[in-house]
Figure 1 (cartoon, helix red, strand yellow):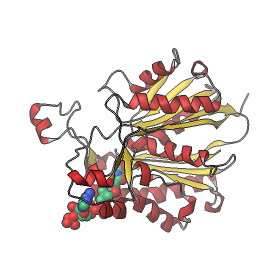
Figure 2 (figure 1 turned 45 degrees about the horizontal axis):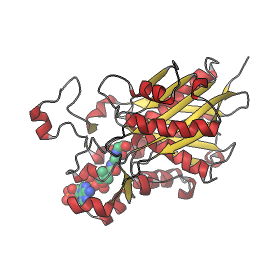
Figure 3 (figure 1 turned 180 degrees about the horizontal axis):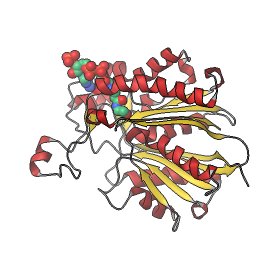
Length: 329
Ligand code: UT7
């Protein structure tokens, strides 16, 4: 039996209905549409309604991916959810909530909490189960609801994030495809540059910490920018060298959508035309673990991404972590 490869047979995305434009945002913030567009490429973001959570968005995206794959939830062997914004602190895990909401009775499910790299980490992990022959049908999701965890008075972070979810169904096949190489990494020494200081075990929420806003995202944007620009290029080169694949053979780069300037800098440095990158940060802002599967969905739905295409998924995020892989459709 084997070898086994992982083929993406279904994909789907979900974004909340509500759109917050830059124009609306800057009414209550010392910023401008021009600044936001020039420094980030963002024009608008989607924000979850009060009744929505990370797991409800993940479930919507997952349902669409399952329909596309023509697969019943009960046929799944595994669900892996990449998110750092779970519905509940500690328990129950959002992956189990998605499993239940899908009606995927007793299907194993777990959550990968590596921040914006969550989807690529999850995809890499999921692929190992397929390659080993252990599982045949795996659902991989990236979902994030950050708009409830940012300080809307802090212009340095408020303009950057949006909510959304993207999902893929990966199925075992004997056609060579799927994960060709990957680089995962973590440098916890840089962790403080992107953190939620309070609300965890180390600093439980108190009236004082809430009043100080320590439950919200705090980010050293310049440090993260520097880290991201470097690690994106390095990890792409490593992944290509590992797979012995030249840049010219790559059809699409699907990068984490954190800042269009980071993407442009990487394109310049690697000498890849920008139109070979799938970019949707203008409409969704940074959706963290959801950004890559959402961009992949749009690439597939628009017909840009085709069967047999080689894709570079490149991500970086809190931790700080990075996760980049070469994937053949
Ligand atoms: O998913 C991974 C997580 N995040 C990231 O990847 C983010 C990485 N970093 C970034 O994208 C960028 O660093 C930012 C977009 C966050 C900031 O852009 P920047 O070009 O690095 O700006 P800066 O932090 O160097 O700030 C430049 C100026 C500052 O003013 P002074 O000190 O020069 O007077 C800021 O106070 O821009 C000011 N500024 C703003 N002005 C208007 C910061 N945010 C805003 C704002 N509107 N929203």
